[in-house]
Image 1 (tube, helix red, strand yellow):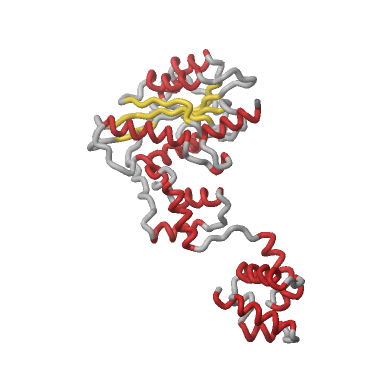
Image 2 (cartoon, rainbow, N blue to C red):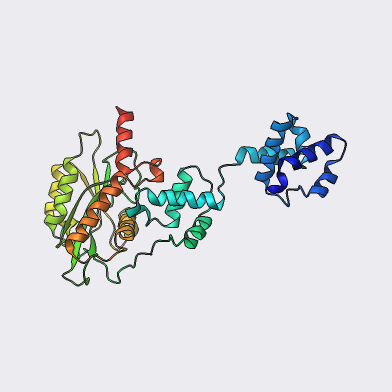
Length: 336
């Protein structure tokens, strides 16, 4: 603040040391916690102590700040950015991997700022991003979504997870699902299907398959790829899905048995039982499907590249700011 320049500081302290009382100085110069932000007064106190080598008690009286206020603010104050610094920080985040990070929403940007140690409210981030035209376009949900449930056509497994998605063990809890992606004119013939296999431990896509037809073989292919990369463990893997026809089929269930893996299924018409995978698909479609893909090959290329980004470069605050793959590698190093 300009009113807290060096001449002002010297004048306040000199007058106080000459016998002027703190109430009169506060009235004269407008120094009060009502008129000046606490953190600015804290900075003033610290600078005055350094310049005059004065006791903290004396300086606090000079600037009319209660001792308790000063120490509370000192203890709890964290990094606070002005708008120019916030703009710069947000822009740097958006430039990290611009093909994808430019599509981050304000809440995602806020999470990354918090990870870097910035104390900032999401509403402030929203305002700044709106002012600079940095808000990504919301994904336009399809009116009719792909539904793999065809009734009870095979075996229904119990819900072993029961929404207990968290685990500190890699490869202990996996989840699979199928979603539809459209290109061109988005007709019945212009769509592909994606089935990823995610590890709840770190959110990593262990395997995935993309095809024009969501057949049983299509689903089993990525399952085999995921299970084949699991090392020897002293615990068994559980693979969770919805009640899609692919997952009720004997072929899918036999592959699980061959790998000594448990099967778990969501309850019928209960999307929250598979909420983690639904969240993954939403993030992917927000960051991939914000543009029009004219051909199948261009769409598949974009999907494949995004999954690589998601695994190797997209940081997650719940993983201590690491990507999924990096977190798994760090965990393995600690366990070695």
